[in-house]
Image (cartoon, rainbow, N blue to C red; front, side):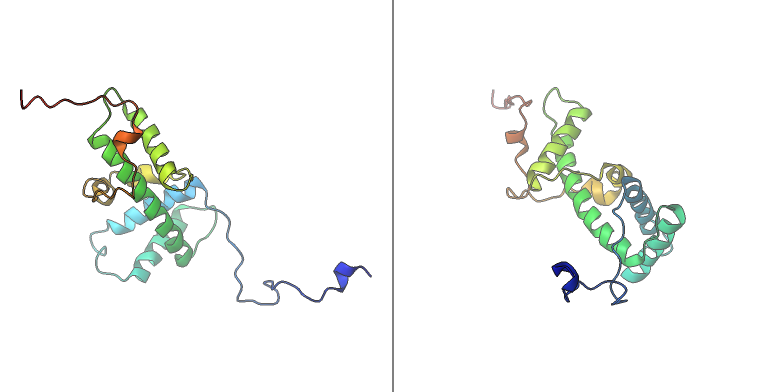
Length: 178
């Protein structure tokens, strides 16, 4: 008998411990987009948007998501956990994008703004690229995301200075004192 087959230590498996959950598959961009659609659908429902608990809210998001997405079933906890991560990332991305849009570098276009936003996001997130653009496109015009960056306090540690990062900007001149 080989040394490997004589080993008595084994890792817990679902067969031995039914409480262990099988890891669900990675979320696809289309599923993240649908989750954003479902979250907006439930959060903008005027009849119940403020009259429900968090658990009730995520149960409704889950129901809408599973009705619309047929790729794989997700329970309310999976929906909540994924949404929290997506929410944080999309709000950060919106803050950067909205600040660039409010003061775009001279001669730049919306395509340039997206490129700068991606670069700044990655620089501020330990080299991690923003992978939620489909979901962000769904939520970006919603009030929560539009306000991000507009009302954000200027924390030098949270975002790189747009002036430092933009090589396209031209110096501005104050003509009021002439």
